[in-house]
Length: 453
Image (cartoon, rainbow, N blue to C red; front, top):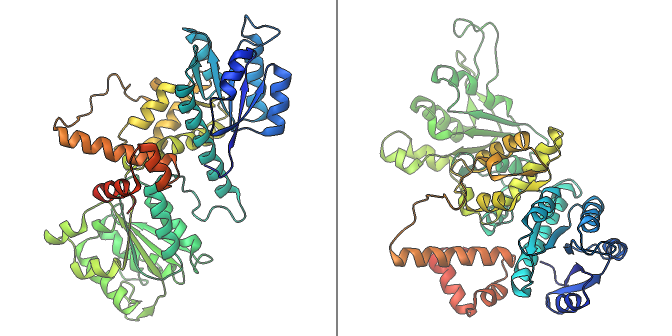
């Protein structure tokens, strides 16, 4: 997280619990407050990422009115702070009410410092992820990868690749499943390139009928065909000086593959019905969700064109392989749509958070965005529930799991390594310590599972 210790504010009026909690969290700089006034003073002075809040505070230690009043003030003064509400045993009604108001999580007494510490660590980790993402998006000039929300090691690797390729003029092929956000990376490549002040022109090769695609790409002269009332530039010519983005290039018809190949080789085009060669200076970026080598084997895609558009490759992992990104994206989408639709929605229920983290997201980021958008509109309270998202609960999840013990063990090991790396921001020493293995053992496991390559 950060080199110095994070601050943790413990709001508790019981002297015994104060002492226990103050010395239980060695990784935090702990401050204690016993009432509403002291808590608010510490909140303003320390700006802690995490607050633990006992609802029973003076002058109403036997009730919850003072605790709920303080919770409301904390969320108003420091909406990014993660509040963990401490409740009495089996007091789920007040716990759910606190979550609905915007608390990050709740913990039932009696307190086990080790278990509570795990919740506090997770809350602090999420706080820093959100702060870093906000800093990148609102810093001078905006984020270098504008629109990209991610914290996973897998996507950080993609970001570094984009930053290295952006200043060059090499033809770039972006590969990834539908809905993974390939177009966001194209915009980042454009924004970081020397062509950022020129046009980014996009065309979806799968969305336009074959009969029209050639004229869309190459343009046509007046009278070239029925209805050609005037000379019209194609997308390639319009992009002159900038970047041409060919989305779903794997669906490009064979005749146009040959014509595109000639353009990439000669850097000149001829409009339909024309005889003049027109030089065009563009950088070409292509994207597809299809397996191009497989299409080449089947004779549906030209091998020479493949090598022309594939001078550099960016592989975008599916959301299910991006540890931690699902929840980060979900929170960003929730904020976006709550503001857009003027809805009083502030967060997700614990069950919704678990489901978001566990769901495989076959439609990737696009599916996540659509589900959160619908859920924000449909939510009745201030929290998006599992039902609002229309996701399966973990109790009813019927995902197919392997029965082979070796497969089960390897899957568990690789997922544990990914989670630990995400929690330690990729620090190998801390990850090894968290997993209880030596650094050489961790390096061998990372190499075995292809983690952090």
